[in-house]
Image 1 (cartoon, rainbow, N blue to C red):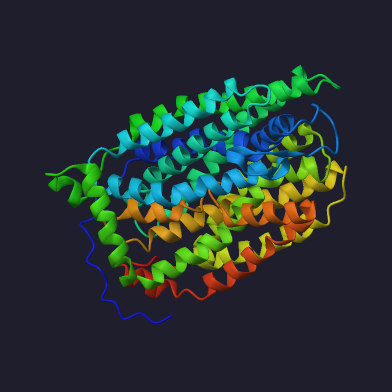
Image 2 (cartoon, rainbow, N blue to C red):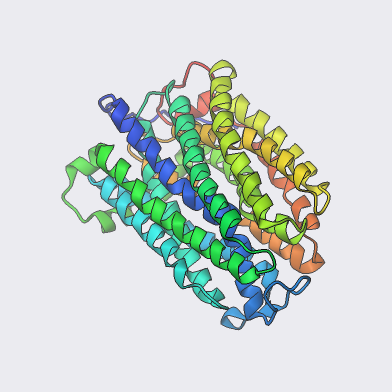
Length: 463
């Protein structure tokens, strides 16, 4: 891609970050990963699908029953309700997250914004204690609030990254954050595994449903409690615009977003990278979000098998994130992410060929996912930080977050539509291959060094 833009003038570099500050930043990954792992990846899909089936007239524990529900008068297959809900929440985040980012860039109190978004999401997650019986609409509404707040908090959280290290340090900082997040999410999931295994009763589907609900609630409590650490240890580092003050942060944030949308065409290579990320990460997030539903509905695996597999993914992803981060230091983050997309394509092919009612192959595939998952996400985050004009980190991460951490929408929409047309989760899974193939081609076409210079930043030594 051609680019004739004069590089932007960067703001003065902020003072160096301390180890305490970076550790505080890592701990928000520890805090919010409970929502991503326990809620999104494991429990919510099967839980909300079961509640929706009850609303559709199915008996609890009945195999082969699907039926339809009619939210707002729209006829929806019970098995498609959750994927559609994910897509709807993302359509709302398209409007919410860039505005949150613009406000964060104009605010001298980003930690307050982080607290507001995180505690809103944690509160909505904890409120799942009231989702009993066939209250699928309450569950859907709470999930949408939690998922949007989750994304908003991540936008503010990610905007701290360029302030914590220089161009050659961010891959390592981002990778450590993801790795610690996987440990936190894995630890809570392990505790939930113990609870499910010790308190569950074979042949008692109501007990299984109750345990799933309480596991979701535990993630909300975990998220809220550990968010206190970054709120305590992170430092406020206001941008030049925030230090000027003199206006209303909310209205100025909207106006700044409007200016950014008009000016963003001056950074076509940043936009091209963002397009590539939106495509391939949509595929990654769909695999993460719908893995448990695929395992229960198509492969007919027990909930305990799914939890053990996701737990395996979490702890292998800790090592995988650090390993791919180390590889990025040798060959560059851009090449490492491209390699990870090749491996993701193999994961989809392997998942399609998995036999039903066979826990071991599913666990092996989960281990493969763990090795590439953390690195592909952590390095994408740090790569994007190199392409953001100084002082606009929040806004640009608002666009970035539209397809990050479970807020993808094209993949779940395609998956849900294919299932509604074919009643086959396997065929729906095949539709995800295009996201990795097209995403790889788009990312490979980005001239990273030129893109970083065009944004007014200094490229790392190895790309």
